Image (cartoon, rainbow, N blue to C red; front, side, top):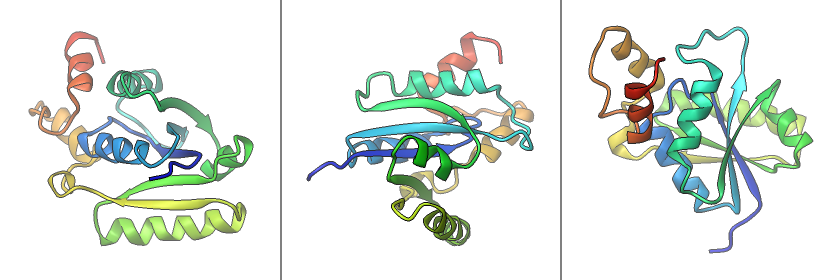
Length: 161
């Protein structure tokens, strides 16, 4: 398979889940470089501060040579234009995800005609995992190790949130 260019996998990753990890690793096998990017959204209240989420991602993928992590302000498509990125990776868990993501994809294409969105279906074992479910479990002092990468669990266990 010929690997092509750079792709961005954007999200809030609050926190990074095993589902996110799976999508990123699969995308990294398709592209020369994958940027896992946290979009800053002042309207969104997160459980974990930006620095912690960046650390979750950096540690989880520290041994994957072609994955890097960044944060950015503004529209994802504007970040792509500024950095000459032609691919956006999105994970799809359900029909609902497809509806939302396909609409965003069309808008992005109108704003930046050379952008392509690559949809990866979530692996079956991760379909029920979402950051919001994990946050709810954490808020209720539940066990989340089945949902989070080992590196994220290690950071949460040994460092303050």
